[in-house]
Amino acid sequence: MPDADVMRARSAFDELLRFESRGPGDTANAMRRIATRAAIPFGKLWALRYRPPKEIASHVLARIEAAHAAAKRQQLERLAHDVAITAHIAGAAHPAVREGEALLRAAGGPAEGAAPRVVRAARQQAPTHPLELTDLPLWRAANEED
Image (cartoon, rainbow, N blue to C red):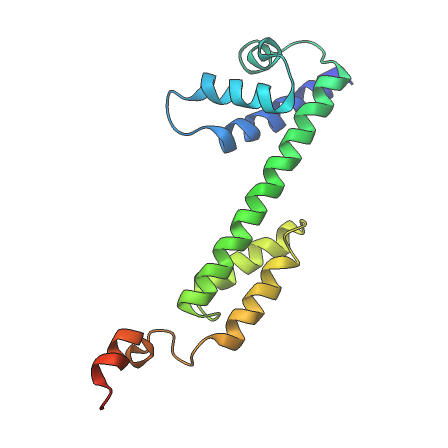
């Protein structure tokens, strides 16, 4: 069973590190940010990444999984926000909006209910053709007769 716990911790930490990393060469800094945020000693994370232990303490595993769940929830909230903005700009029928909605439904996370509600509101407010030039305020102002 300790091997399964170590593998769970490694996979959750690897994904968490991928979320946190800002690019090549930022691994150590990302590990420090995760360690600070999750209250895990940096040495434990370093060992988990570069020298996998034979067993892992339950409180370290719980903190890694909690940090992973929080990061995943944050990613879903960002996706829901991006879907809402894209639906408002490009229209609810845009393929990117449909793809984002499908990902949110598949994830089934806490952001699942928020995005469709915002997208429905954007559908109701969106013009029939999202790229209609006559809907632009400057175009209307330039072409209005006094």
